[in-house]
Length: 169
Length: 172
Image (cartoon, rainbow over all chains, first blue to last red; front, side, top):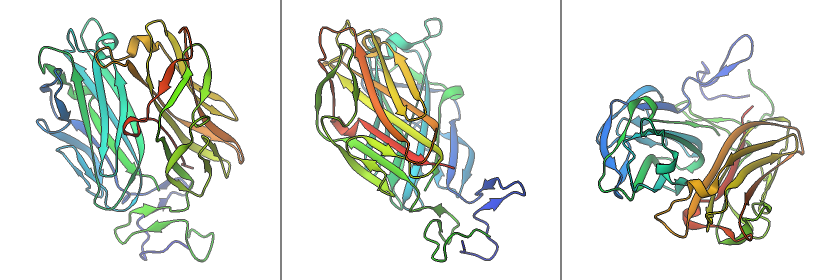
């Protein structure tokens, strides 16, 4: 028998036996506006630093709009990040994309952004994820580093930049 | 009322109603040392074959460090692979990452020479794919990589920052 409190608010099955967990740590933050000139010439940028995220949902209130998620309990977490870049310019041939947790860094993408852009808009959207071991009070955030350009002129676009995660077990 | 055993070891809510499941099948393993010359001229290489993986966690003990996860029960599993390939030559223009399960293959095709980072020799590129897969009890999951078009199987898998990993979890 699963018991913790008498009202059982942590698993909520429907009459059709679909199960929701309204108190389970889960969050989705989207960039609140264009974040301009963050990388391109080697600057490692933590997404959310200059332009905050807007929370779509934040069950259990563990996400800070500066881009940091703090694990409330030790467990395994699914973390997903999507970043849409604009103004990817000549010379920007190295891209490194990390999910950084207290226990380890997940270097989720290494690629050449210049050859992957939409040639008509110079836009590029990338997604990646990790199943991460996190201890209580550990943190997670996303970092992007584009190198090879003449300046840090790459922007992050609100439409396609988000960070989400969930405690899975 | 949720019941399976009287000790309730399979689902553990906290006082704040966060739910953990310490016995739920879930694993994460990574390559801790270099695995060189594994593909490049058409070899489809299974991660973990020559260099064993290192487990970060393996709830329920279903993962073998030779790179094989065996489903303990029929269900839906999140499975994923992330590979960092080094020494991608300019003529290695065909390749895929394969999440190989007993029921089916999940393949992500790309042109390795096109995505490699040109300013950071020795030319590196990432392959990654996550899927929700149907697996039956005793089915297996492995991660395979194939790069083709090169003069030899000279592409390496790099252990830098634990950038090569595979993971999975029973979701329902």
